[in-house]
Image (cartoon, rainbow, N blue to C red; front, side, top):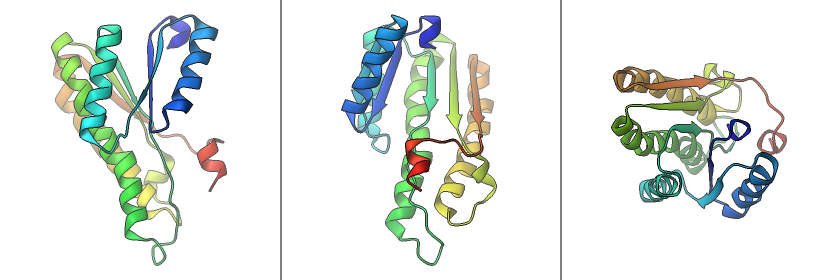
Length: 171
């Protein structure tokens, strides 16, 4: 997106991480890049971030739901807070971000929402919480595609297999 000259807004609970990436994007691609603190599990935080993005750049055209954490454990060892944390970030976060973004997208009769799911949505040992969140995300994506399609809002998910990232290296 930045390569095409699009403005980019990076949301992260750790705004310093987002700020470093925004600076790199601006330097490398010459587009506007903004870093904002956002807890995707909190409606007020999400709405404030999307409102800030719209104020900064005039619209919200594309949303990429890619916030993620892991708290892997076998079911008999999985604590309730580990379940809640993963479902909260992956599924509730995508719901809240999509809901906030669609307010702008419906008004402008255009938008794209892309969510990062996973092949783990089909089940993966030690990942009951993560697999459930990703399966739920696929259902949410299909539902939003039906609801928002009439407003020229395209909603899709991609489900990659293992990708070497900081998060997966920690597992």
